[in-house]
Amino acid sequence: MRKVSLALVLGLVISVFACGGEKASVKGWLADSKCGGDPAKAMSAGHKGCAVNCVKGGAKWVLVESGTKKVYQIHNQDAVKDSDVGQEVTVKGALMEEEGIQVESIEVSSLPATRGYL
Image (cartoon, rainbow, N blue to C red; front, top):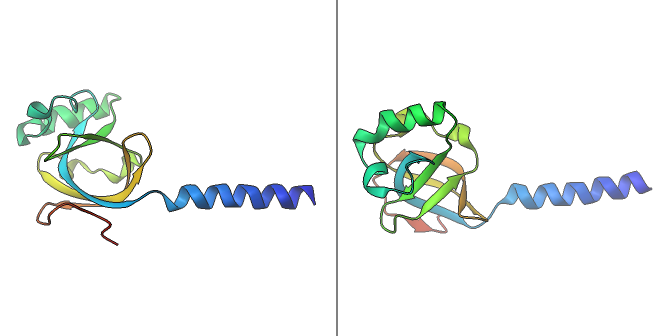
């Protein structure tokens, strides 16, 4: 009985985290966590090589929103491909606590950023 209760509780906790937060579409630039705080540097095609090298050296991918310059931590780092960097993109996913986003898709920007796209 105790094992069944523990399994149910764990299942509920996992399902809550799997659902994520509010769905969003955020337009911005992918950058490394070292330079993400400097939008003038991070939001340019010329920063691509630096960002890729910094991430290979241990930095994390972040998204710098085009309009507000807000920096979002990318929760699932493997969602970012080198080919996504160096251009404005639209990231769709779930907003998470602590200024983060769980990425569902990344595409070259052509859509206006919105919240609640699904």
